[in-house]
Structure formats: structure tokens, C-alpha cells
Image 1 (cartoon, rainbow, N blue to C red):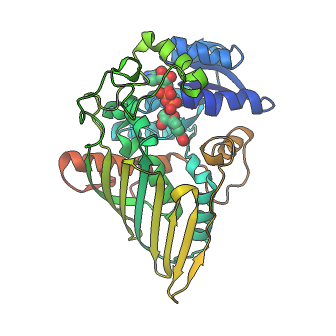
Image 2: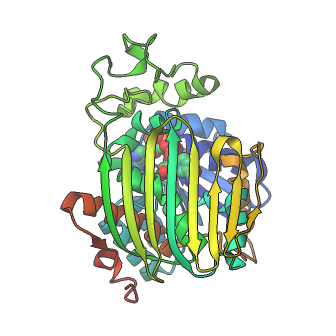
Image 3: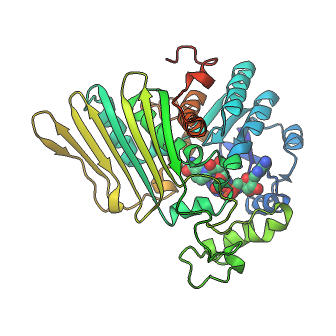
Length: 408
Ligand SMILES: NC(=O)c1ccc[n+]([C@@H]2O[C@H](COP(=O)([O-])OP(=O)(O)OC[C@H]3O[C@@H](n4cnc5c(N)ncnc54)[C@H](O)[C@@H]3O)[C@@H](O)[C@H]2O)c1
């Protein structure tokens, strides 16, 4: 039986790892303790998880609990500190995406993993979504042949998109921007689908929807004079059946984490629209865009290959996959009005948890991701951030070349 601890007792730490561990994996996993920079939130989570010990000092937790595995679910910019410390203590690490947020911390993780011989798994749950699995199977069957080009678009609606602009995600120093925090999912998915690695990146980004684009705004929804008229009003006291109040509002005097901050705040310094071009090692080129203020939620992916073109989208609750071959035919693999599977993220959370906590002997689609996949997906985001800051195209080998000398 392996012993686990969690660092970061926010939504993901508590709901996606803590609760499932104590409810579904008692026979094979012991959740020994949790840790958070916010002691109140750590104690609240510990209470929900059977009154296990709660820490604010990560080193002390390691020394007292001596876990086998550390689960890292704190904010993105702190992943590296705990991942490296855990590896050095002799633990394996399960880290949420993104692996980290900049090239220096990425290098530290890769170096520590190599030096210590312990293992880091990056949990890319999108690889487990039914729709993505179907796409991967078709790609593995060679449906499009050699991949020539990709057109890839992610639309976040103003509920999902705005959720990032209320919190630490909207501060570049905390999340690395949406290009790291959010797009790491998208870049990993594509790298995995086309079985290729990115080489060179060029990017543009703007913020013209969130941030200081409106005068009728307050510091936060709770005290905002525009509650009645603002379409982004969130009631922190009743959201998630009162859990948001207990986890965040009742704990904010410890660290000042305001969970319902105004999406038009001056503090926001990340883009809400980005456009990225990538050249891949095997020759494909990709154009990607992320829109965080769309009227509807959707992923749209087109892969053009030597044998034809696959078009996939998730518009309006459906899962559409169409393949156009060179004989003028269209083969339809659509599933319409798909009911999301239970267990979080349309059913994509339970399967990786089983692999993580029960172990696995086979992984035919390579869904369990390592640090190389973690680095390649944030690598595109890091390069895109550099490209925007320095107004130039950026090669991933500039910052990953020491670890992967074979990068082109
Ligand atoms: N794979 C997915 O689908 C998915 C979904 C949501 C979140 N995530 C990832 O999970 C992580 C947590 O996200 P969340 O939505 O739970 O955020 P959250 O804001 O709800 O929780 C983050 C927690 O980290 C704590 N924290 C912040 N800085 C810390 C530090 N230096 N040391 C210790 N604790 C610290 C905060 O106090 C908070 O409790 C993020 O990395 C996010 O990218 C992944």
C-alpha cells in the first residue's frame, strides 16, 4: 500500500484527488496528510478527508509522514518547488498540469528527476476523454497518413473563460498566462495525437475583453455595486452549494486569496486572445488560437494529411469527427448530444486515477504522460510567451536543448 500526501488543497486537490483517494482507493492507497500555504483551507480539506493531519510546512510534512508519492495540486508557479523537494526526499510525484510555468523551473524539474531517479507523472486528463481517445485511435490507424498541417481552435465561453480571470490564473507570475495554464492541455493533446514534437514557435496575443476594459466594476463580486447589472456576477456565498464560501471566503484572511475578484481588475496581466504558429519536427505546421470570451464553448481541430483531412469539433454538446479522403468521400464518426460521463471532466478523471493509484501494466495509447510530454506542451507556451515578449520566433531547443540534444 503506497502512502500519498497532497500539496494544494483547493478545488482540484480536494475534489479530484483527496476525496476519490479516501472514498475509492482505500484498499490500495493511504492518504496520509495534506498541505497548503493557507492553513485554514488545509484544515478544512483535512476535515473533509477523515481528519488527517494538515500542514502549512511542506518539509515538515515530508519528514513526519515519509510519503511514497507527493501529489502536487497547488497553483502552477509553485509546482516546481514541491516537485523538486519531493524528488530529493525520495518520493515519486504526480503533478497537475502545467508541469510548471517557465523555462528555468522546467529545467530544474527535468534535472532533479534525472539526478534522483524518481519519477514525475504529469496528469493530462484530456488524453482520457472519449472524444480524444477516438481521435487518437483513428490517428494511430494512420487515417490521414503523414500529417502535413493542423488548424486548431479552442473557444472558452464567458463562464469558463471568465473563471480564469477571477483568480490567480490571470496573473502571469502565478500561471505563466493561459498559454501555459490552459493551452498546456491543448498542446499536449495535439503533440500526442500527431505523435510529434514542436520545434519553433511564433505568437501574438491581446487582452481586450477582460482586465480594465470597463468602468462599472468593483474589487470583487461580494461587495460590487454593479452586482445586479454585471453578467459576470458570482455569488461566492452560494456557489458550489456553499463549498466555495467554506474553501475560500472563510479562509481568505490568511492569504488574501479572493476567489471572486472582478474580471475587469487592473491586476490582470495575461492575454484573453492568442494566436500561435508552430513548426513540428516531422514537418507539420500548426496554427492555434485560444479565445477566452467566446459566446459558446468548443474545440475545433483539423488535421490535413497525405491521405485526407480529419475535421473534429465539440460544438453544442456533440462530438463530431469527419474524415474526407482523396476519393471525394466523407466518413462520419459523429456522436451527437453526448451526455457527459460521471467523475469529472466528462468522465476523463476516473481513468487516470485508476492507473495512478491501482497501477497499470499496459498503456497502448500512451495516455500516461511523463516529464518529456510535460516539457513539450509547456514548451510551446513558454516559447509563445518569449515570442510575444521579444517579438521573434523562438526554438524550443533554446531552453530544452540541454535535456533533449536531439531537438531540431
Ligand atoms: N487537469 C485538470 O483538468 C485541472 C483542472 C483544474 C485545475 N488543475 C490544476 O490543478 C492545480 C490547482 O488548481 P485549482 O483549480 O485547485 O486551484 P485553487 O485555486 O482552487 O487551489 C489552489 C490551492 O493552492 C494553494 N497554494 C497556492 N500557492 C501555494 C503554495 N506556494 N504552497 C502551497 N499551496 C499553495 C492555494 O492556497 C489553494 O488552496 C493547478 O495547477 C491547476 O492548473 C487541473
